[in-house]
Image (cartoon, rainbow, N blue to C red; front, top):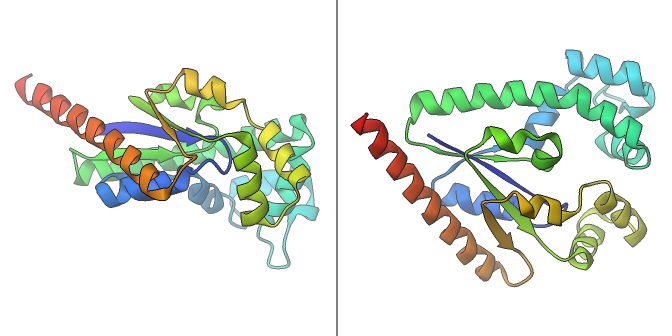
Length: 210
């Protein structure tokens, strides 16, 4: 098993890269999908969020309104930290369960953990390699305006709420720039996967020799 983190700035193209890695044979665990699972109604995580943020963050069906929650935390670093302190431990537990399940069935698997805050939380240190996807901030803004239907100002706030991408790039093992065509992004992703495949094969050979 080779455990790899995948991160980058908001609207940088992480999901496009992770989808291509999945097509190439990697097992992808999406932390955003897991965050939705740990916040379903009546879970411990859900109860803690309601206790701290109040019922204003709920939809009519009692599920968490992620858009409202995002608008609350992006303007308040203290509340953002509280959200992370509540949710991230639960996400980590579930990710670990998924990793164990995949490893049990596919011992030679390349497992990709896609998450926005791997570097901010220090979680990237738990993985053997780190991929960082990046784009110019102007492109990130344009993509969010088109994708999420928000204003440039709101997009700017979301970018500023995360660490500068250069800090993430400094600890990356692989950098993938997403400022060109989808074809170029696919080729760059394929090159990274080929390197990961080589590392995985070498690791398996060494394990067999020990």
